[in-house]
Amino acid sequence: MNSMQNTREENGPLVQIMMLVVYAILGMIVFSIIGFGLVYLQYGGSILTDISWLSSGEEYYIAAQRILLSTQQIGLFLVPALLLAKTEGQKTNVFYGFKKPKIELLLLVIVLMICAVPLLELVTQFNKNMVFPEALKGVEIWMKNAEDQAMKTTLALLKMENIGVFIINIGMIALLPAVAEELMFRGGLQRAFGRMFSNPHAAIWFSAFIFSAIHMQFYGFMPRLLLGATFGYLYFWSGSLWYAMFGHFVNNAYAVCAAWYMQKNNIPLSEADKTLNIAWYGYIISAILTFLLFRYFKTKTE
Image (cartoon, rainbow, N blue to C red):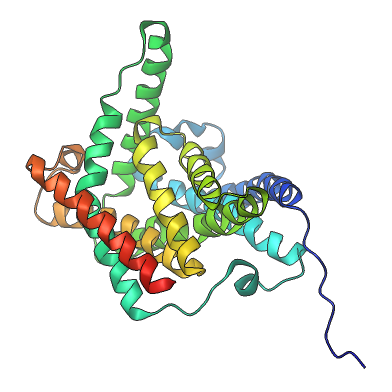
């Protein structure tokens, strides 16, 4: 008697991508309703009659923005990825690959993310200094206005009066996106694209492109693209989503901690957008160290 259990074959990669899109739309609708319901309970019905506060950055409405951003992350990214694994009849940890991480590799990821900071800063400044052709000046102005508005909201969210708000921001800005976005973009999309394309690098960079584009911030597109590819390679080489999630968390937590440090030292948060004072050879050293650490991580996980 054959004791081996027959497992149902997975749906095709294109079908999985379509399911992710459908789940994301439904999740966004459902969790937006939940988010606005929570906001209504906290602020009352008047907050729904005029929703200009969504982009105002006013301190009074920061709690409402935190609620909506969190429910958006859950509905748009986390729930679709979890539902895909459920639809395929597999446990999430098995479907996406959650092999137990090694401490030495987690420490390596921390060092990698720190060494890559100057390089990412250089790419960020290059991206910000890009100029559109005259025919697209209208688009450029629209993008800059949208970027300025997003920065205004971000700075408002990063204002932390006490340690409690700091911990909330670590959870909302660092932990939740690290889990939700990595499940969606690396676990869901990259995994599906990996089955669709014969070249794993195409799957990694295509997923990173979508990851960066969906944030709708053109002047941060290139550094976010590189970060997406970084997380993609960590996932691909290790076979474990933990390292991508951890790298994502470290990157976002660094921004929260930097903002906390600046406020504790009476440094305006607007100064955070200025270029780091690094000599030209610092960027070269950053690029070399980042490359070598990538190679070492790959070697250790083979």
